[in-house]
Length: 262
Length: 357
Image (cartoon, rainbow over the protein chains, first blue to last red):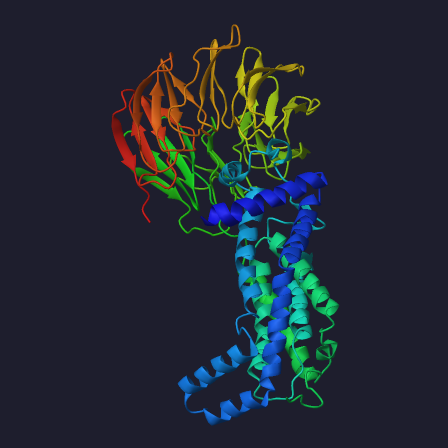
């Protein structure tokens, strides 16, 4: 089922873009970039709802009623949860709205990794699997084997640049840096030290770059290209909504000067 | 705050550098390689190469003693007349090694390690010279001690199949859709011949030329001067080496069709034969029987009229070309209970060999 719904369509989409681009050197990297743009466009409404959901959750942290129930039911977690759900319902907030796009990203990332490995077919067995994956309309005989070169990288292998005999994983560093940048820019300003959303976002700004950086170190560099482009587009999308918090990039920039209370 | 951020940044850099030393390419997975000298069979799979006594099915030796994750093998090992077993690694370490077929001990002081790619293809040994194709697109030329005799020849594309020779020229198929013809005496190569698709299998020598199957779903006959013609069409990719037998050429495609081509008139000897699923392995012709190994895990013996004489299922999937060892047909299934199984001409199982964990 996973193969049919995720890996096959993604592999065919990648192959189709690659074929359309002219299937020469560097074209598979460009195909991954175009693929990422396409995925971002398709998930644009979901990302927009994530932004909206995160904003609503952030505003809720500064809501007087919300803060009151936190204090009132501090020792009764069950009652607190019931009251929180009531407020969510009354205000029309979906607490999971901010998580959904992130959850949707994971199958895409895993599927894309499998698709890249499948499309590049480094082993005869992979090539055999590719033969079963391609849709009949694809003119795959003409385009395989794919050219895995992109700039200085082999997209089927983890990337590093040799400096003084040591492999510096430049893509992993760029992935970590752009992930950190994106998380920072989307982190809302807050004055509430107990703001759970802000605390979670702060933790995310540490763990997400490390995790994606580690993925980039371990897996095919085609995945890193996806991460970098996805992060950049995420930043652009967030900036386009006018909500990017550029002050977060400055030391102490995530503090709000005056609390916004309702 | 600034100090914290700088600390985090440098921790990230240091962490990345440390992790880069610990992590590498994921394990390369593929079906096994197989060869025999009649006395022993040799299987390459994962980190090991095994020698198995053909008479008993017992393991004679395995190499190496301590496996290394960056050294992986699945090419068909190649035996030389001077008593060497040659094979290259497909792991992140691209070592090309020589073993003693009797003991499994390394024969060269150092492996040949200059190639940038993996050794998916087996080498050709001709006139005391090793011609070793690599996935980096180069053909490496070594003496029998593992020393490079001349600069490698760039052919282009990943080279997955063993070169063959007619005694004058060397023929090498490439995944770049071309056949390369090399004159080993002069070192010159003719203009590559377009096959119309990638060719992962080796050419077959016969009738003063070669027969080549490819992903263009056909078989071409090519002469050393570059003349070529399509002599047969298949309904899917032709993966394995066609089997040349006097006036008949046997080959199979990925849809599982088995073809028998009469080379005197380029007509098929039978209409349609699709016994049991896709075939990547080359067909093996022994006496009056043609042996077909299928992805579905069957070893099928056909007579020359295309009738099934017997069919056995060692299990797993069979992608590796069966080999003949004395009177036994050896088959190396992938992901099966057995790593190697031996059958006689009547289909009776002589023995099986199981890998110990």
